[in-house]
Length: 144
Image (cartoon, rainbow, N blue to C red):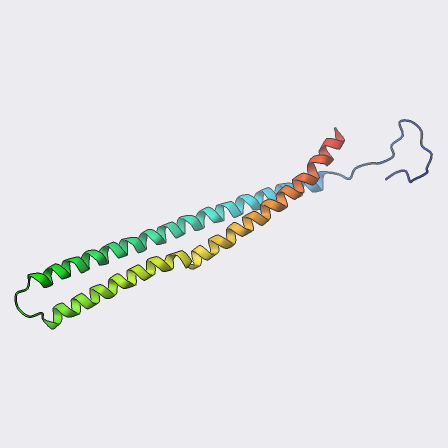
């Protein structure tokens, strides 16, 4: 403020001057860059989580096929089941259970947790960007 309350001023005199908007412009630019970086991080994490889930689903499919084939082999045997075949069936069931569990755990993997954190960070940065933009826009409009 260039003039205080109750000061006498003449018509056309400068009584107030806005601070430079360069600082606000810089903050807005920084917030935009941070937002883009966070959005890219979210995209990278989503791609990673999708790949891990696909790998787990493939392992489940392989284990299911192996179990089905082993069960067919077992039914086709006319003689009593050998220890080796029983071991193969047990191993295949274990592989199937492990693959199913890994597929379920894919939803709570570190990548998924990081995705949730990155999404929250993007939301925070976007709010900061909107706040700075709200401050910056009136300052620009006042200079016009």
